Image (cartoon, rainbow, N blue to C red; front, side):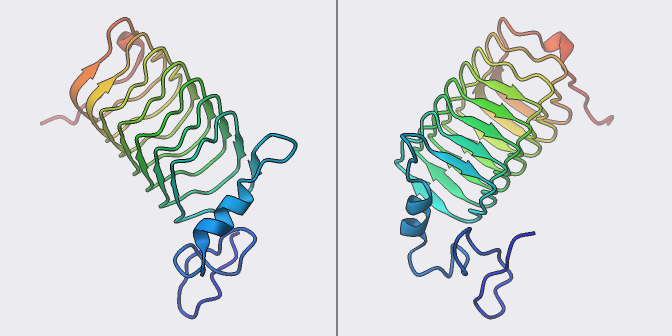
Amino acid sequence: MPRPCAESRCGRPALSGADRCAVHHPDAAAHVLGLLAPVDGRIVLADLDLAGVALADLDLSGCQLMGCRLTASTLQRVKLSGASIQLCFVDRATVLDCDFSGATILNTVFAGSRLEGCKLSECEVIQVNFLGIRGVRSVFDHSNLYGSRFVGSWLEKVSMRDCNLKRAYFDMAHRQIVDFRSSNPDEASFLELAP
C-alpha cells in the first residue's frame, strides 16, 4: 500500500523515497531523475510509486520496470525501446510521442490512458490492459498482442499490421482507420453492443 503524501488533506500517494506526492514535492522532477540513475550501466526500477510524475525527453532504452506505478503520469518523447515492463500501472496516463520499439510489455495496465503518436513496433505486448484508452496515430506493427484487451477503447489512425491478435479483445472499441493488414483479426474478439 502506498504511503500517503505528508501534505495536509492531500490524499495522493507519496513518491517512492519521498514524503510528498508529485504535486507537493518541492522538486519532483529532480527527485525522479535521481531514481532513474543507472546502476552498473543499467536502469532497473522495481516497486516504485511514481504516480503523477512528468517525464519528458528521456532515453530509457533497455531499462527494466517491474511493479512500478505511474498512474496519472505524463510521458512525453520518452524512448523505452528494448525495455522490459512487467506488472506496472500506467493507467490514466498521458503518453505522447514515446518509442517502445522492441520492448517486452507483460501484464501491465494502460487503462484509461491517452497514447498519441506512440511507436510499439516489434514488441511483445502480452496480456496488457488497454481498456478505454484513447489511441491516436500510434503504431503496433509486427507486434505480438496476445491476450491484450482494447475493450471500450477509441482507436484512430492506428496501425496493427502483421500483428498476432490471438485472444486480443476489441469489444465495443471505436475503430477509425485501424489497419489490420497481414494480421489475424479472425482470432480476436470484436463484439459490439446490440442496437
